[in-house]
Image (tube, rainbow, N blue to C red; front, side, top):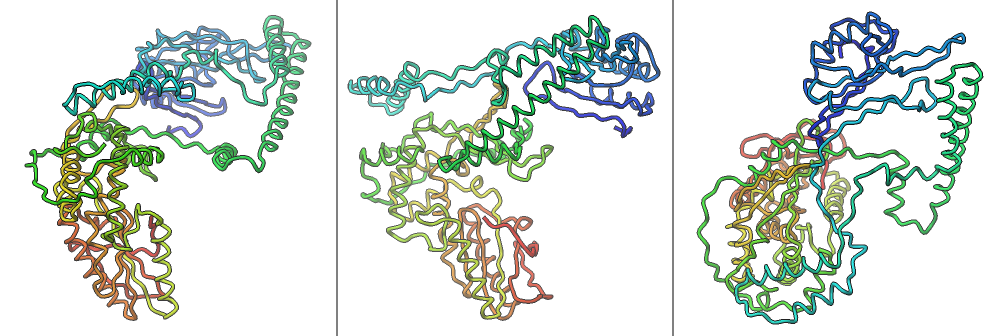
Length: 613
């Protein structure tokens, strides 16, 4: 707003079809306004908009008098198709020199397309102010999509188990795997409908309203008395009635402050040595007033994300896998299933058949950290069938055992391995740098970023690497079949609109198999030890570092390693991002000469500090 004296806050509603913009406005009576100021404000919005606030302007359309500001507001609102909702009821009452002043500085405007839907009235409540509360009601069709969730706390697990045990004890003459899986899921859903109720949602929030913990019946009684005094004062505005009203306002203020203080004391007393860590952090966030603003990505951004995950493709020819591994390909036992179930999160068929439901994957676009609401960067998280994730977790456990036994992965490959964490990778890097400091030698470290690492992995490369590692043709066939043809869909928030496409590329973020598969297709990179250069990997985060007395030699060694990494990644369909990759120099004293590092002839930025992991 050009006039700095006018204060305005706007909120955009994304889940309401009949009302999109709500604007709160305040203009002090001391501010000098021009018609252009109001023209600018009303022209910002065209449809489905509500503007309300203390305008401090009067016009016969909503008040008992007319002034210059009120005329300006009225003319601008009509020119921009806004209609006043006021019914000429006074919104401010004040006793001045024994005379009750009734004015209407608080105005509510709505665009002409929705104004007729509003019900506007003044309540008998002021909360201690001389302005009365205004209640505006709009009737909106109840077509909001409700995603039902089950209430597992009220589930009858005993009856649930008995029902499924009885159902699955009956043998059926079904040989088709898809039909068997459909029957299996149908019976599970049938049992859930019988013994696991849905969470009941309240469509009358005022009926289910719960006051703050410090609120007491005594406070409610004082509020009721204050409202009675206000109603009496409005009917009979005498100094005596005003004194009684002010006394009740003061009484409520003192009582509420005392109740808040006692409530705070009870809250502090409830924090003791038995409070869980989770509950303690939750309370600390509440004390600090921490609120994570929800970011809802625009529909075009979601569609753009889906297109990037599902480029147009021609169906690949099914490869032939020849490896055999009787240990990995033997039937699963019940103990492996129970172990996977305990992690919260059936053997591969002869032909690698994948149930159709497992190919249906819902993509949840999660905004990345340090985002702007206008142009959010999104991370695609895949919601996969629970049964599919359980099965993949069983596959992961077998593959992990085989990989660790055969020592396929380098010790410098840290990510998603047992007894290893990001601290191991950081500790090795810091120790290496400290050793260089002790010898007065500089260390150059290059931190690499792979462009959409998981999303650009070639499915054919995954199958080829697994076959080379002799994990068995059954494993290779299943994993290739699962990744080669997946049905990805994004459901728009607050509506039933679904956008879907097919994909034969990338690893699903959220699949238990994905981190391990990524480690396997990149396992050769960390095994290179050219010129004593160390290449460390944690998932898709790589760092290359080396120590030498000549800093330019360090740069030369790093560049050679970089060229090798670029070639290795290109073989599996990945590439480095030169704009997001950085390098640092760790040395005692100031270094005026810095090495020059490049990725595909594009220079890497030097940074005195960087964020790793």
